Image 1 (tube, rainbow, N blue to C red):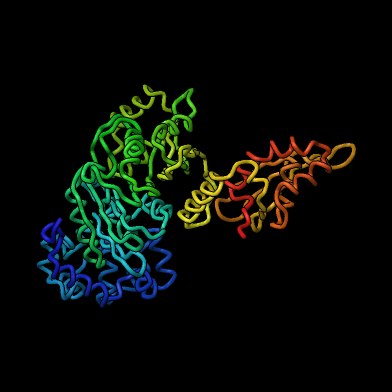
Image 2 (image 1 turned 45 degrees about the vertical axis):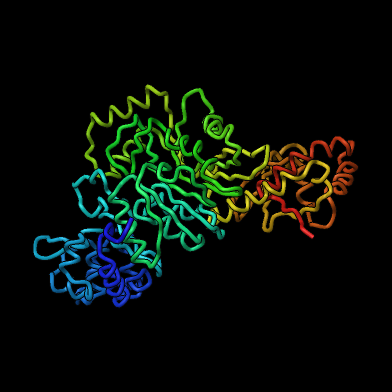
Length: 494
């Protein structure tokens, strides 16, 4: 795409950036201007205090009223707030639009941290009763922030954002990738993304087309995607939500495309929905997507919704009226496919180059220490460490118990006092796994102080528990590998 495909000319983008910078229209600038009470109120869609604090309509106040509080403001105040960008140019670009008694926002211009601004279409909440357009460009929401947090932020040469939308993922990719490419099927989305990039002083390669089609034959070090993953019969009404694929086909399609997209050592991370079908193990079904790809895969399920809640969520998301026929048709499709629930999560793939890739599909709904991308990167690092060590090498290594690891016990009072029924090791940080363990595993973890090789520990445990050390060593291999994978014990490096 070139400069003619932006909402504003390059000069207009520079003028808009100057206006926003001069006014202090950033997250911290808004919070400082409004104070904690008004800022807290806005998070609950209570704009009363914010409107009182901006009643003088200086440039920052006007921008807050326009783009945060969704108010109609006097033309003269808007012109002053956007200067040096001419008001005529702002109107022509759709930045603002005429409304009764003045001007209102034509797009959503959101401060994103203290470094960026993100441009998108006005959310449905700001236009009650008006359904979103088919080519609506979504702003920053829960799904996009989930992917932002889950992405591994290590330096790479090339990065790809599939289905970029307004360009939120690409903004972040540009902080640790030398070259960023982004695709989208929607021409309107690409215009917004091009403007977002220019407004924030970034330059991306923007390509038009459906998902991976525009980059066929090319490889990247990092690929991310917040695709149109909504599960249904394949009906397409909104490009940000509907892929046109039946069921969870878009997620399976991306899994199949990943091997040809990634460089050696490259990583692909994308959000997905997948169906839970009656009589089938959802994890086994999803794991099947990666058979034959040669990729390491870690699928993390973060949420699960029943079909009714799922349909309600996505109809409300597009501000669609509660059409009973539309709801019934969607639910009938779920029934016909024997769908009991829909899962949501993050799929993490890596081209490791090993003959025996690791595939894990896990339910991980507990809170995770942010950023989640660091936890995912560490998981892949642990897989690299484990992959090149057989049982003998595992036994020769020294381990240290995870810092802050906690033991929780459940016990029942009996004739001879308290009898422990269940022991659970819980991590207070990182992935915050909880793992039920038997006394032998607990003793192994408790003795992991980084001093002795595991084999020496097992000799002591074999004597204490009166079991042959050979039997203990044979059983310990997969147990230790699992504990390392979960991060409950950490290998010591010399």
